[in-house]
Length: 192
Picture 1 (spheres, rainbow, N blue to C red):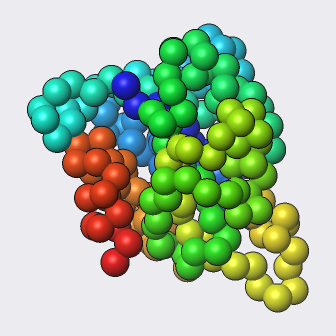
Picture 2: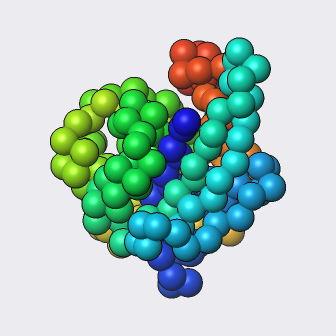
């Protein structure tokens, strides 16, 4: 079993913001699997269930999840989901935006600190470990005149939309590669 958690903020006001790119990627991945999100237990999270074949042609059970607790409190909902499913943090992959990557870049990370991302920080604090995978999705740095917190809550500019659409497609392919071929193959393929 693999748990894929996309980070974002609930509600229409945030739906198209840079900070919600984790939700955007999971929505696209759910569509590729022909599954839909719904409220579930725990109630503070939307989930979708699917399967994909791993590299040994075994069916891998997938749980896609979008915490509805706002970005900075993603940890408790993620912990509840792991407890509910009996999954281990090593079965978890978190998809989130990253200011330190250029717009459109992807990086798979297997452990480490939160890098200033409060959603990841909340998950590390709740799980009491940093031993889980993250797909970091680059949103770029804010312009010099804009604070980072305002930038991440802003929408993508019209001239960025084609890059974002391509990045979401590549992210879906990276998630598929992670499930089917493993983290090493994913890093080799998507870090170049």
